[in-house]
Length: 576
Ligand code: ADP
Ligand code: MG
Image (cartoon, rainbow, N blue to C red):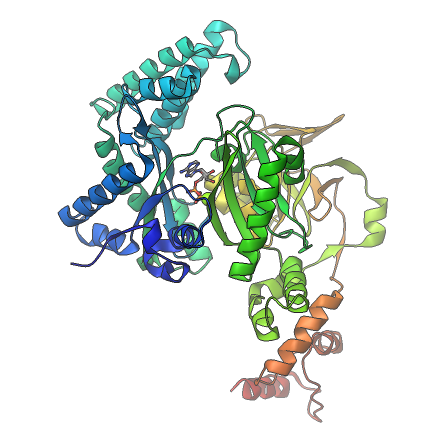
């Protein structure tokens, strides 16, 4: 029998196949002495076995998990389900290749009727403890038990309404207790059993749920789009919880070591005071720019800047980091090579060579073929743009130009595109369920969510134009209207998006072929130095041939170039 569970101090970044990207990098950060809440990783091989063995987890693996759990209890000095000092963990998915938001993560696992008391005493903040318990039951109910989220929302909203509250923060500890009782009743009615009170049962159910989430529809679609094999499976990370929602000296955030949209060498990201991690990513509250963290927590900010630089030097690539501050102490929760737009990829690669961080060959290998494609995408015609009516401004979440008819949900956008339309998907915020609609649309506009919201991250990954966090617009998804100032747009009306500036424009704005920046030329010249293949093109007219030469194809003068058939033949030969 192999080893199926590794503590964070047993792994390294080179173990991605086994520990998944998240697990391998948590191990690496632990190894180089960064503040990472301790935990362990159940391997991708355990996931493969789970599927091979009829969706069950082998006894030996369960035993290994409980051994590591005991170690975690010892290291943290906390105990699962304890009334004095309860251990709470997150259970986090993480495949070899990053699939942001596609699989499930459960926070605050370990809370039960007893541990919640312990946590209330320990923190001196019963409201916080009961709110965490409430969130946990909701998340577990949704992810593990697959009870529709709406049913939990109904219980929650009913209690708010009963008191005439507008905001969640108005709910008292007593209200939260009523909500928890309501949630538990809901679980019993839906599942025919009580909400599991034994944290070990909670843990094993959650691990299974993460394994299961490998095969949810959105994860399958994401793998198909990104050509990720179905067979590799996900690892599961079990990690001590830290709390960003413990008041005004706590917070949570996401940051990139460089600007993921432009490539500029400056820390880029967002954070929220007094919030738990999912709040930033889910776009529920629009977060503050990371620079403002310097005012909120100056010392923590300085420490974070230091770690960000250290990580970028260590990985020799731009890092996408998740962190949480618990009562003035910084914890790193994730790092990975960050997704970036094509222009950013080119700029970073060229800059990093100049900085001596990477060599030219590495720089060239950092540009994906699909990104070259993106660089060749149309942009707005400057004159047209000057004359266009700017309606409002959101965040420049993913650059590019888009023009199309608006649709208010993924299915409508997909259907319109199938009928030959160009669509712009307009949502309050996107969630992984919207993926197919985002793929179909020319661009995406959201009312809520920051530069690291789901819409922004996924759009950048796809090279699709996106304007997010456009707070001045009113989106009525049910009624299918978009209101901007005095204008009301209906399904099928045209708008245009400038993803580089975050602008929303009235009507159809014409686009033109892109102009290529100096950095692009630099990368191409390095590619020329390195390559051994000759590049020729199959151009059907002089204009295409001219463009191909400008983009680096070699000139090939042939007497027979006047006929199509001979050109085709020639290019076929040159490919051999
Ligand atoms: P995803 O793969 O979708 O990014 P993660 O596993 O990274 O999911 O979890 C989502 C968020 O939950 C993280 O960004 C982080 O803010 C929060 N989170 C996860 N584990 C912990 C933890 N141990 N303590 C505090 N917050 C956590
Ligand atoms: Mg994450």
